[in-house]
Image (cartoon, rainbow over all chains, first blue to last red):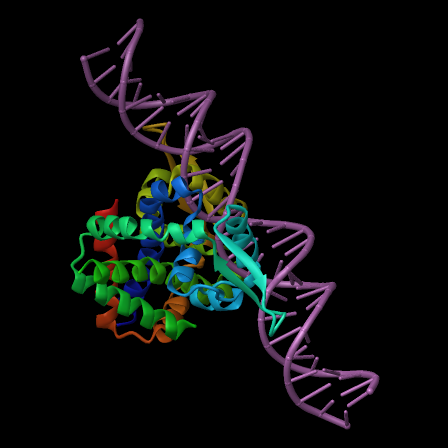
Length: 142
Length: 142
DNA sequence: CAATAATATTTATCGTGCGATATTAATATG
DNA sequence: CATATTAATATCGCACGATAAATATTATTG
């Protein structure tokens, strides 16, 4: 039975990897219009959800170290999409906030969403299943 | 209904991204012992499945361009895990074959598999579901 | 034989992701 | 109150991934 287990699992890591690249590739044409990369877009997404998060909070959400996020967010700041502001109550923390330009980009989210939903060819139910399985997987690994 | 759709989808790309990193991070300690990275490991996996594949075949499997794979595979060759041999029947193609050392690494696959299966906390049925959904998603996007 | 397609490499570029280390500030501890 | 500890983030450096574009070489097709 070990053989069975191995095949299943190994295909999983394979498929997650390939699916991730495929999604990024789908979004790319839209994202380059805004001059941002796919990981940068994910950071923006988390800010559209909740503005003003700290670097640590965003990192926890995406599963990234601050050493990865700091330069990434600086590029977003250079692009004029976010601002970095040290918290007054705890000056270790740096809050990331959307600029007007960054907030405006949220409108394009609908467009990208429909793009993926259309291209993915999954039912809403399947989307929900997939999301739930991935979250379960990830939370167990973390 | 639009709102519902958007939320679902956007979480998907989010979760795929995070899950991919989480799996890579889980494997990392084991992989560094062998001196290979996670994408390099995926290439080895495809060779354990079917040895002697061409660069193009591996690329199709992983969804990578040959321009990405060529340097990656060269690193595997430098590490003594694979050999690169131009096909005699069609000299455009380059076949990648495992060395003894590369084949030996396949033994560790079981260890890694059990590691993931154990840590993931998913049933075999859920693994199957997840794999099927990801493959469907990917094949539609490609 | 010429034109076109397929395959892999080269080159150049950029960004990701992380480890190691430093820095700064809040919090304990004595 | 001084100092050690811990936490959060920044900084630096590095290797590699991923892609685009251009090139070279070989097959195939008309």
